[in-house]
Image (cartoon, rainbow, N blue to C red; front, side):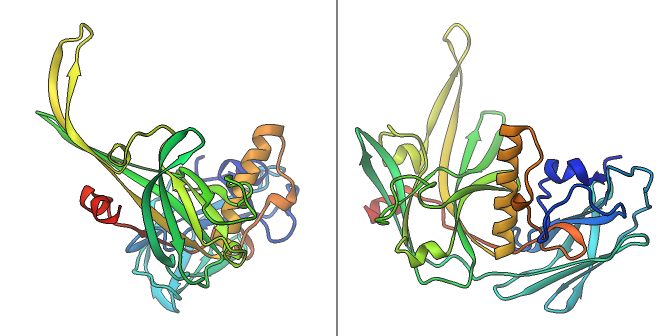
Length: 335
């Protein structure tokens, strides 16, 4: 049954690194509600997951789960529609803004009602972005310098690179987009070397993609300019990374040209501000995965976090903004 979570194991498989209170695998045998959603991660809607969770020590206690969900933004109730009953996914259509309080309550007979709320943080305080080539050791590399403006009410911040490739074939056209963390280090932070670990930054995952994240307190220590390196050392020029456009030729196994197609690759930055519950939940999830990978055992209780009252998981806000695509014109005007 895909829509059942046994908490002894699934809290780790699904990233439910739970509990404001200490995590105890031998918890009460009564079933509880698992909730996970990130208001602000998507534009125009909120997608979240609601599932029943049962004690692995008592598989006999299987209570039918028929959730009654109340979803609200600033106390205005919004319809949440089920989009995947088997996997427990729901979607609420809404436009969210900084300061909005998003609340969810889940009821089902035989379960203790679960509740959670979160507030959308202010947008990333972008002040200046420089695209440069700098030398690190004996190699040259493309680097993006991001200078952060005034500190906001956000608990944590994050940076990510978004890349898009476009292929125009003679008989086809397709695009692919992916996001990744890149290499992050402080540009003018005297207390840290060129290492995210010394920066107290962690790579966390959201929707299958990774980004660098760090607590806002780093700004108080003087770290307000960061460098993010898109590709490995040795990239030869701006255009190799920022914009790469032209015709390419495909060859057969014998080296004969078979097709010419047009190719474009381009990049931009994705900037995150995070609520406390979002940052702590995602960081706890990464710590838990690392612990389990290296030890083969369940992560200890201090690796666990949840803001769901009477349940497990997290309902945690994030604010996501993107820069414009980096163009050749932009590069020429900003060198």
